[in-house]
Image: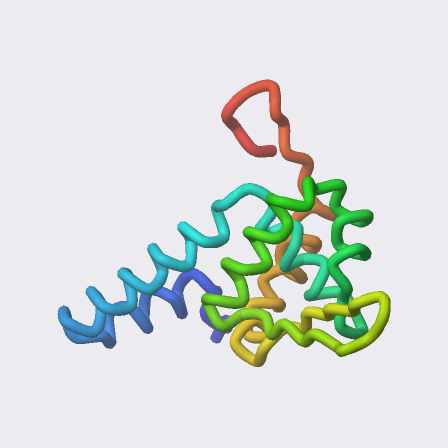
Length: 131
């Protein structure tokens, strides 16, 4: 017998939820997608997903080419959501590092799926269909 697909597993898990639980989960998913849909948030999380150590503000700014204000806001959003931890060190010059929480790390396999998909497919931005 074939193994169920991810889609089939997701549907089965959804069916197992009571209406109240389903509503709560779907509300959480909506909140997560709202956060992830903010400009540069996915790129920022991708950096943490593939990093081997905490990242500094200046590193992220250079890697992503994001304005300091936008980067600061996104880091704050992710910290407030419990996905990143901000650690500041009493040094001169000041040093601040960010690291992912366990909650963020639970999202990181999705980035592996995105990379796998991108290796096999090309997104055609000239029309609305995906190859």
